[in-house]
Amino acid sequence: MSDTMNAVVTGATSGIGEAIARNLAAAGMRVVLVGRSTRRLDEAGARIRAAVPDADLLAEQADLALLGEVRALAGRLAEAAPDIVVSNAAVVADPDDRTPEGHQRTLAVNHLAPYVLLRSLIEPIGDRPARFVIVGASPRALAPMPVDLDDLECRDVRALGRLPSLRPATAYARTKNMNAMLVYALARRLKHTRITVNGAHPGIIRGTRLGEGTMRGALRAFAAASALVSPGGPDVGADTPTWLATDPALASTTGRFYVKRTPAPTAPHTTDPERCDRLWERTARLTGMPE
Image (cartoon, rainbow, N blue to C red; front, top):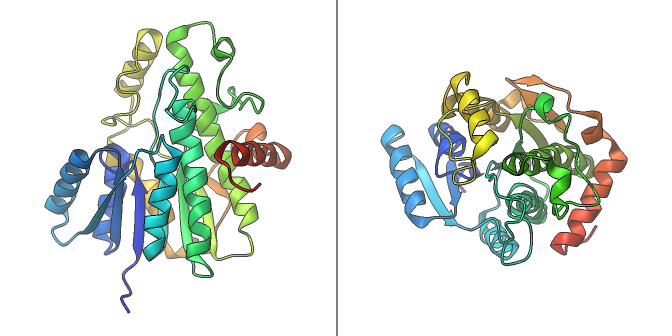
């Protein structure tokens, strides 16, 4: 039996996700790259192999905006249940952008997909040790934008702010708070297993495709200004998620959120167990999973 560890990275065709995948491949793991485009999966694989010639890579094409494809992906991954799953894929979409399944696209990719994927892999992993790493965003920046638990789909666009150009960012921010809430809720539910769940803010990073095609007006200006003061590119953003996925000292650490490898508090509205449970239950209903 091979001792090679299996890792899965979503959103692995560019930016932080590709850098995480490259790091895990360099650590000797078999890495499954998950992306929406077969062409981009091939290109990312070629770039990783150029940096890590002996990289053991597999590619899985899936549109994470479609829960049917997420479930199918989970079924394929279950055949060789992963030791590490890094949920990194994210989008910034207009609040009125709905998937063919009827979900707001930002919600579907950023929250519903990791909820379904990670829950679906728990049983295949069984009693083996495994790590789930959820890539979130800045706890400080997200604090003023709590999740509206009665409107996860952002149907009331006016509640997202007066400036239409900033509404996609507010919808995105809500889903990133959902990421933190999922870390805490899932970690509590897995406390008697050997699966750990932790979150990370990668930092404001240059060279990602996040928000491509959506940035306009005030949001475009804000993004441009943020890029000017960004500390670095995708390799910087990949550092903390890679560390959470690989450091032996973190084998039993769970239910925490990190910034620059340091535990960081997230807003009280994300840590409240009752709110986390309400989000869990509402998400279960949206995805058709047991509460």
